[in-house]
Image: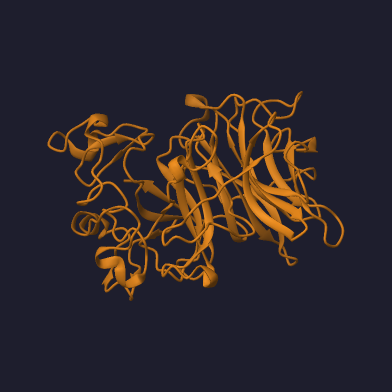
Length: 389
């Protein structure tokens, strides 16, 4: 496992802001927290100008003291419990508390097999307790990467922590000669969208055979699947891909990319629906700098209650929408209808990463304490995690 603690971003004018120097940076460079590009990050064009602006410590984003379980003077961060994060003021706050702007600390590489891994999605596994002995895994990661000389994109899995190296899912039902992507494992106790399938289904998408064929969403009965079917309810228009599920909602609410066809041609759009809804609703999301969130794949992921959407989009820190090309990650709060709450503007994640580096396919751990994502921050696309702070 590699911990990125010494990266230098020349345009910022300061070094080592990831890892060892994060605490000083978060305390001294707070901003308004509105993604406007303030403070010493302004030179990069990066939005949410400082770690403090990203939510937990600086002048702009105080943590919720009402959620504190231990004060800064009585053990500090050492008293934080599982499911809590520690702010720069050494206050323990529940990771599910979203009252402040979301902020994450240093990056840790997740070293897995495959080239250009992406779409990290994690679920909790049953507690093996003493039967498994020391080092028992309690979380499972699914992701997509290229394998073999043909660079075939396939779905793979790893367990942790510490993380195993990862391996392609052996099921020929899941990984075929076509290109698979967008894996999402439902919790082990979450009912499958497909009647007669057991809880904990694997959701994913793939291209159908034949030149110019569309992508379709699929439901598999398990990780090592013996059966998989098209998700017919969501496979609308010219195809759908990259699904997110609010699995704590009843009925489930879904977000996915849809290829919509009309007289003007085919348009990729992010939509939301419940299984019984007559038609999906398109999400109209505004990024920092007033550019719209648009692209072939916004790679959505939502919190279990459907309250916060994480996604990627081409982004220009200078507000040049037409020339936006680098994929960056964002989040936005949602209302009960699955649309941005009060037309709220999305917030940039991990603004400390230089504007020429991608941050892609974000998601959270089941306890919402860890951000998972793909990035080329060190020159090669890899998977990373970052803890809430």
